[in-house]
Image (cartoon, rainbow, N blue to C red; front, side, top):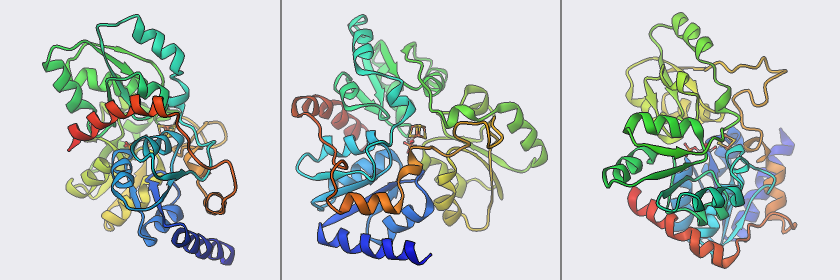
Length: 320
Ligand code: 13P
Ligand code: SF4
């Protein structure tokens, strides 16, 4: 609409004025991903977002995603101003792993190596030995397991179960879940697959074990987009946030993509394959963040940042 175009034009001008760059996750709405691309910004998975922000010469990073992504950007780039469309964009994994309780859990198992998912607060990261995203979780745990390490894994229970199964590593696992991926249903997925016998099933590993078991490809958002390109199948059933369809369809214009079934009927489910916190990243919110209105900037206490930086650097080195 005209109003949207007006906001986009104003955001474009403000990005220039502030030497700012827009970095968006695949789960944000298509118009936000398009805006990031059109303005010289970036769209990617959580690991790629962190790398892009660190390497970019902008003075201000505007992170369209959820709070842990803004915090990760700030940990890596303390000299940059990190803004978010809204600081209310949470993540159920982050909320499901409070720093104090987690720290006490780690204290109770002092001989364990602590590995946490990127979807955590900076305080939880500060308590960790390693941070991983879904794109490197299996490889890292394999590596630590081969070294004979005893491992604490937090917070995603499905990703934890998946890694344990893949690697055989014996891990103490925290039991939080993503409210979006937790909704995918295996029985309905099998029924859908029966209707499309030639389709490949692509699944993000935050999904329940029974859903992962049906998958032809399991991986981070970027890895799923790559799988969509590489697999010979013309039809893809996709179990992750529907925001991914924007870039996946661009990458594979000739393929047919179908959303994997969730438990809800639209009226009852909490998420229906779209993260309510990712959905908060609209044009108005981005404009507001860039307009010097308060309440958008990420601040991280310096001593906590220093501690969180250690495992985060380990992750980036491992991923390199
Ligand atoms: P990716 O690391 O695959 O981007 O997933 C992170 C996530 O779940 C963001 O919601
Ligand atoms: Fe967190 Fe799930 Fe939303 Fe990703 S999709 S931000 S894991 S709640």
